[in-house]
Each structure stands twice: as structure tokens, then as C-alpha cells.
Length: 354
Ligand SMILES: CC(=O)SCCNC(=O)CCNC(=O)[C@H](O)C(C)(C)COP(=O)(O)OP(=O)(O)OC[C@H]1O[C@@H](n2cnc3c(N)ncnc32)[C@H](O)[C@@H]1OP(=O)(O)O
Ligand SMILES: CC(=O)C(=O)O
Ligand SMILES: [Mg+2]
Image (cartoon, rainbow, N blue to C red; front, side, top):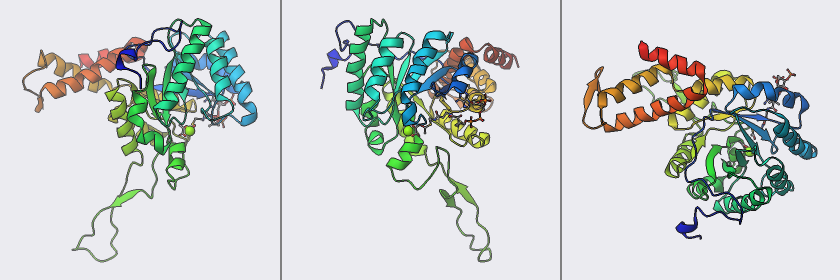
């Protein structure tokens, strides 16, 4: 294990210095597209200003015989598109695949200056991040990249979940972690056949009422299959100063359940989710932007609390140091999003005047 003193030393001569803090950049939706699919790729310049992150996907959902087309398509799009202040990420193939090495070599040397984050699938432990970390440093040095490319891990194997804390802290490059519910379900041998979301069979049932007739219907309540993993991922990320994300919701037509799943993740601490289809962009934007009324309330509490100590009553609710800190989380997120999103800035300003 490296000495803590060496943690922030570049891993190759000529590589840029690692970041000491992960910059918070809005990333409410990570919009996936297949760069080798001409129809999808043609839409990217128009989609770019509407999303926080565009991600050129090279892994699952790209057929084996289209891997090279996806890789070269991404190089071409990155070189020819003006992304404004929208981030460009990629998801490379898994480290045990025949494509991962060429993905990393090609992308960093050709478009490394355009890439903000590389998402690594099926990360199982710190050793996977260490491998990518050193290789990226060598490639950055070779390509004379001036700022480090960050790394995002997908949590999608049982072993990865067991090691999530060490993954989160494996490198100063670690930007965040996304839940990968589809591969994780397979890895855990769950008996689902979906990409994220709930399942009607995973439920609790109210107790029988001894006063009622036998056979009377008893209410059931569907439970969240992902609660444990998301909460664990959020804690690991918060402990290491990196960002947690819900991943994909595969039932594209069920926009209501998608919104619910995204909101559960938002309330538990996630900063964004993946959009697989254009219809999911607005859902993520709505859910991962704090509601104007909540922001106005947070600012009211902060103003009333002064230095944050003591206890006060506001509208019948006790406020103290801990609610003050929660309100700061909401207000700081709102400030960061409003700086990027003028419509949201207007909505926040209007709510404060009410
Ligand atoms: C478990 C995981 O790993 S999840 C991550 C991997 N999966 C992905 O990345 C999937 C990305 N999304 C997709 O491939 C597609 O959205 C699909 C296959 C789910 C649905 O695609 P379609 O059947 O074409 O959907 P639909 O007909 O509604 O598309 C409408 C239009 O939006 C376009 N479109 C669909 N998805 C996207 C996208 N993600 N980005 C940009 N444009 C898109 C389509 O090309 C189509 O264009 P057209 O009107 O010019 O024909
Ligand atoms: C996100 C992803 O890759 C999965 O759910 O498997
Ligand atoms: Mg997966």
C-alpha cells in the first residue's frame, strides 16, 4: 500500500497533479448515447445544451461487432462538437474485456483534453482503480494532458458492493460511483429481469385483523429493492468526498416509476442519475434540482439561525445546528445548479419572494 504522503503524487513522470478535491459540477443527468449509432450521434449537438453530462457509451448496449465504430465515433464527435460547459464522459469496456485497453489508449491520446470523466464498469475492488489510475497517468503524460481525467466506478457486482468503501477511496481521481442495478441483480442471483426499479413481489403485507372475517384483503406495500445498496454507496461516497448517482431505469415508457426511483435516490443523497432516452432528461432535471419551495425554506432557516448555533422555532418546527447544516446542503446545491440553469435561478428567486 502506498504511504498516505504519496497519495497525491502523480503516478507517471509528466502526468498532471491529481485533484485534492472533486470539483462539484452539476451532473443531474448523465445522458448515454451510442457514438457509433449515426442517428443518435446526429442528435448530440442539439442535446448537449440540455444536459449536464453527455456520455459516449462503449460498453454494454453496444454490440461486439460495433465496438470499434463506437470508439472511433466518440473520437470524431469529441473533436467536432462544441459542448459548451456540458461535461463529456465515456464508459469504457470492462477491464477483463478485449476492448478496454484500446479504449483507454485511443481515447486518452486522441481526445483526453476533452474528456472530463471515464466511467469504469464492473469495478470489484481498489485494484481495478489502481490499474486504471496508473495507466491514465502514463497516457496523460504521453498526450501532454494538463488536467487529470477523473474516474467513476459502476457498482454492479456483489464483490464491488462488499468493497465499496475501498473503491471510493482508492485514488484522488475517484469522482463518483453509480449504482448498476442490472448487472448487480445478475451477480447477486436476484430473480428479477429488469434494469432498476421495483418489483411487485418484493413487498410487506399488513397484519391480519383479528376482528375481521377470515380471507379479508390485507394491504400490501411494495418495498425498494435498491435501498440497501444506494444507502451504502451514498455513505461510502460521502465518507470519501466523492459523488453518488443512481444509474439506469430501463422501463423507458414508465416515466412515473422512473421519477419515483430517481427521487428516492435524490432524497437519500444522490446527485444525479443516467438518462438512457431523451424522455428521461427532463425527469432527472426536475428530480435532482431541489424544489423552489424547499430552497426558499432552507434560506429562511439559514437567515434565522445566524451562526447556526442554538435553537429557534420557525413555523412550529424546531431548528438547530443539524437542520441548519441540512439547509446549507440544499441551498448550496441550489446555488450551484442556478449558476448553470437560468430558468432554475428565476424559479428560486421567485419562490424566495413569496
Ligand atoms: C444496464 C446498462 O448498462 S444501461 C446503459 C446502456 N444502455 C444504453 O446506453 C441505452 C441507450 N438508449 C438506447 O439505446 C435507446 O434509447 C433505446 C434502444 C433504449 C430505445 O431506442 P429507440 O427504440 O430508437 O427509441 P425511440 O424510437 O423512442 O427513439 C426516438 C428517437 O430518439 C433517439 N434516441 C433514443 N435514445 C437516444 C439517446 N440515448 N440519445 C440520443 N437520441 C436517442 C432515437 O434514435 C430516435 O431518433 P429518430 O426519431 O430520429 O428515429
Ligand atoms: C448500469 C449498469 O451497467 C447495470 O445496471 O448493469
Ligand atoms: Mg452493467
